[in-house]
Length: 401
Image 1 (cartoon, one colour):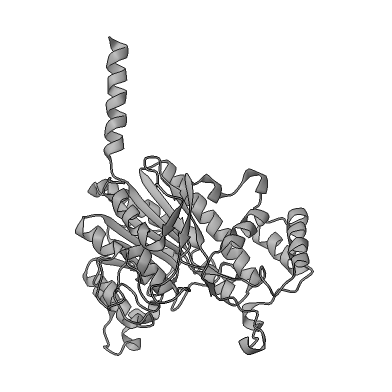
Image 2: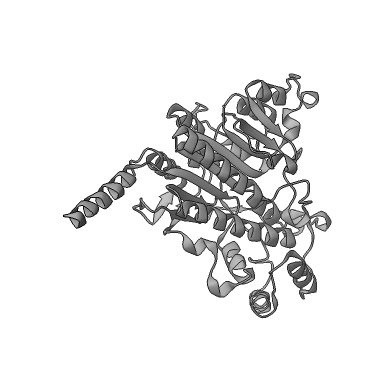
């Protein structure tokens, strides 16, 4: 009799746990292509143990095209991902007819979910802006900042401070003061993350993008993983107190920038930091009711891996990393890169006109890899349009996937 009772009790616990909706974390690895995953695997401190990307439940392919062109930008792709609508390059949160469409933050607020946006770019940049704003020009970052101040997002972390300051704005609005009036805690430096708070938080650590991990003063600026660690703890505690699920968008945005300018050292460190961040997120998800979707908004062709350099170089590079790389510390990796046979050029030193055959990387129209993790849900297909991911987010949050 006791065995039957405990069996029934266990069944009921599992049953009601299954009915619980999921938190949703979406990670955008901006510009990351297939080759970037190969780099992560080759420079991982312990490649034989695999990398964090191996621990997702499912993998899928994702199409990235914009409504008006085969090759997307981050504005159109971000809009597709976070609204479900394909649109034209440069548009954020509006369809091709320039009509506002509901984004993920608006959906979450309508359904009383907690929300967070974390990026190592400006919080007003195309990808994070796609989660909450509506503009016809992605460069309208002063307008995007104003919209952000009106969105009531629980946690915002990244760069772009200058767009919120009174002295820089044509309307002379002090947006940080507006946040304070609304009960936010405003943070401008890394030390500010040490203090726990029950308030909503906006943390802006730089006037523009946060520094590349390779060049970062980690005393002043947090790493992407440090921001994510803070964000996960903050939203988890807040969700327990308020008995609500949360949505969190995390962008590793400087992969794209390093790829555009063939800044190889910068790219390496951005990828290593992304690997570290993904490990932290999956560790959190494995202990909570959390769905994780990781996808690139588009691929950016880093010419280290295409055309410009020969296959023999790729072979040389692969062999060199496998046999000689010790990436257990930043110092070891820098020593390896500096000793490498090919002189990789730093972003500040590199300038070759496209007309003369530039080494700069551009967006491509290729599909990207997507990754899915959930203890409860499974996705149904191996191929998705980026505009289909919005439904997966909504259904995970509302327990309808």
